[in-house]
Each structure stands twice: as C-alpha cells, then as structure tokens.
Image 1 (spheres, rainbow, N blue to C red):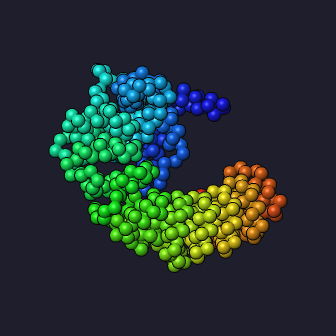
Image 2: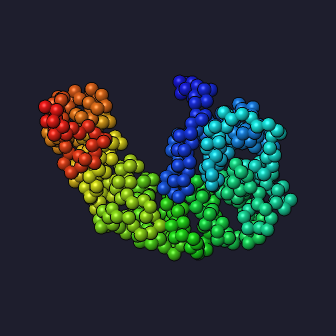
Image 3: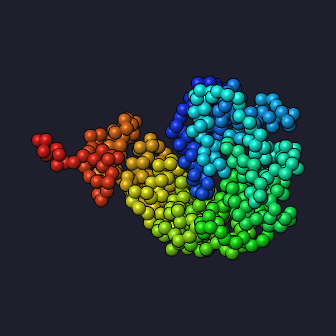
Length: 459
C-alpha cells in the first residue's frame, strides 16, 4: 500500500521527466547489453512502468510518448481488448523495445523529455508502419498477415523498401525481441533467400542468435541455430557475443559445434562472463578445462571475450553466488593474486557478503591485504556482521593502514557509531592517517591522509 502511494506520487509529480542523467544511464546500459557484458538493472523496469503510466494519461499527439500510446491503443482495439490493464501491458512492452533493444539510437532522452516539449502544430503523424512494427513485436498476427499478403517487405533481404519505424526499428528485429517464432517465420517469408525448413540467411541468422540470446528468447535462439554449421562473419568477437548470455549447456554445446568450437582463450574469458551471471552449470562445464594457471591469469586474453579482463573469482564475488565462488576456489583460484586496490575480499566487504568473505578467508585470503583493507570497507559500510567476521578471522586495527584508516573514514563520513566501535577496539578517536605504505599518494584524494611535514611547518 505504501509502495503504491510512493509510486503514484513519483508518477504524478513527473519526477523522471527531464532527467537527462537517467536517460544517459539507459543509453549506457543499452550499449553494454548490446555487446553482452551487462543486463538491464532492476530500475529499468520501473522506468518502463513510469513511462507507461504517463503515456496512458497523456493527451499529447506529436511526442514519441504519445505515438507509442497510439500504437498500443490501436493494436488493443483491433484485438478487442482495449481496457487499461491490457493497454498498459502492451505499452510497457513497446517502451522496452523503444528504449533499447535493436534501435540503434536510444529514444531515452526524447521519451523522458517528451512531456516537457510544447506540442508541435499540425496533424498527428501517420503511424501505419509504426503500428505494423509494434504488431510484429507484440505478436498480433492478423495485421502482419495482411501486410505480407499485400506484398510489403517485412524482413531484410528483398527488393522493396523494408517496413521500418523510427521509434521501434524494423519488423523482424522487433519480432526477434518479442520472441514469437511463428511471427519470425511469417516475416521471413518475405525474404527471397529464405526457404522454410532450411537455415536462415547468414546475416539474419547471426543477428537473430545475438538478440534472441540477449533477450532470453531461447525458442527463437534454437530456431535460428538449427543444425547447420554456422560460418563466421565480420569480426571474430561479433560471432561470440550471443554465447556470453547462454544459460543452457545444451545450447552452448550446440552453438560451439556449429561455430567449430570456441577457442581455448575464449573459454578462459567466457568463464568470467558466466560467473558474473551466476550460470552455475556453465561454470562447472568451463572449469573442467581450466586449472590454476588459467584461473589466476589476470592479463587480457586474446579472443572474442577479451574486453572483460576480470578473473572468474572476482566476477563470481560481484554476482554474489556462493556456490560458484566455492567451485572456482576449489579448482585452484588464488584469492590473493590480485591488485592491492581490488581484491575479492575487498569486494565481498564492500558489497556486504559475509558468507562469501568467509569462503575466501577459508581458502587463504589475506584478511589485512588491500587498499583500503577489507576492515576499512566494513567500517565505511557500517556493516557490523562483516566487521565482526573480519576481526574474528584476524583483521588488525593496530597499524596506520588499518585502524587509523578505519577511524579516518568513520570521522570523514560522520559515522559516529562506527567510531565508537573502533574506540572500544582500542583505536584512538583522534588517530591520524599520515601515510599508507605504497599507495598513500594514489589514494590521498579519496581518503584523509595528512602530511606530517605540513604539521611541522605550521609549528
């Protein structure tokens, strides 16, 4: 009840409108999702819900927001289901498509500013092609079948101009994101090179594999994969983008066989991708071919996944899957083979994951190693569970790089409760952090590090 009230207040006050930073964030995640190194964060769905709410209530007719509303209403009326819940559901699906998916230029800025723009003079734009693309995405067959019967070009690879929307992209792309295989087959019938029952044209096949995997549409992925060999095209990395998101070991093995196996170096980097996503079955499979040498190599790998240089262990800690962390540690990953500014134990402390921190320490992680040490992270996060765990496991507060740094952070951020805890642990409240061995100069701008020479000059 309270959450509904908060949501309604946010929507009514239009708090996201004009939020250029939010639009930039959406565009940023779109680029990362497109190359398979991220998924949309949870707040993305909230933004979609926000836009759908405003589209339902909007009375504008020339903005992108209003045009998407008109598409959703038109298809709902044709389907005989134009009540608010049904229209809102279609709106949310169309906003997801418009905000990213396969549209090369994100509409995020225009959508989040649209309600602030003055309505343009003149009649509302013709949305025939936009409605067709929306119908392909939403799986509304009658309208698409009519377009196909009229000879419209609904898929790349024909002599006629392809049906396309400035808001949603083209019909086939929208259908792939929607995941309806029957719709994809209908649209493919307008491609002269496609033979029902045979493989898809190569470019369309690669494209379908990539975006169906990014969207988690595994029926569409299996349809595009088929059983035929899959020749490479373009840059090597482009042929493997869709492999990064596979959860199914069966689909991975079929894809590897179609591509002619995934290169060894690629499997090493791919393990980090799968650990990031918590795909346990894939991690188990990839670990079979990797030992301590591969798991502890932090250099960039040659291969399609070399844009992701974190080790599998660090990736698993970030994702937060204890089982995957233990699998990687048991295979020989060294929890101390990391740069002093980014160890797995520091990451576990920063993210508040005591069970994972315990597993790392049991596997030999040095509890006082890091810049800052994990105990400082626990203080900064006011995480007493993590603080007690680290102390119990040998974290010291007696050195300038531990106790003084921890107290400096507590004082800097006005964390009085943590300053009290540190004082009870024997750290002086006015402890001064002068220098942190080997990394004081680097972190001086982030943490309060005083220079004793300056004090002498003042005297």
